[in-house]
Figure 1 (cartoon, one colour):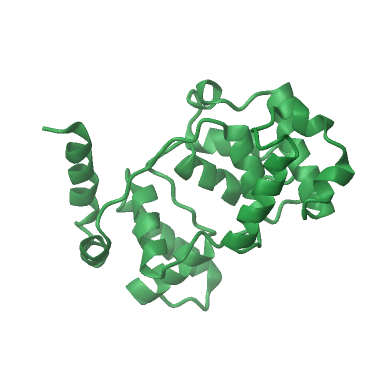
Figure 2 (cartoon, helix red, strand yellow):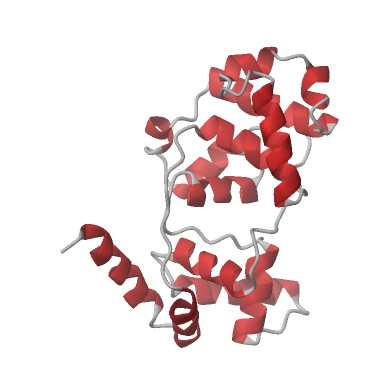
Length: 217
């Protein structure tokens, strides 16, 4: 029997124990995760796209690549690119700084698959949020969609919060109790919380909605 089919049945069977989630699975089918090779660029693109529509983010990303004749730049090339040229493709001053921070971190400390594969989810978050401009939410998205970690719950994502509030009829007035209830429900989904999050987004036709509020250093 095909190994992918077997795995899919495992996470579907597990998540279907939650009757409300089972209905979403029946409506939306199954999902797959695909690893992204260049994690440095993934983080750079994530920063560029924040607070932008998908269409505008795609334009900015192409302009970024065009600075190197359409080729993916190395971290050193990103660091060496004059600030004004990066600013000129439509990024804010802060985003230019953050993108170059990511590239500099890759050069100095590294963030490839081999390195991050040795770290647990919380360790990856702790490691990458050292970068000014990269917060917990951005790192959770990398864990899900670039590293394909299957048991990540993005608690601060507004799309997930809103979907769960509606689906489970949760009182959202008390923010502390809301977070506790969301975590309680999510524990039942482990070890496949990433897929559960994907169903939450799909139920509201949402993309991930939380943007990091990274404190300055």
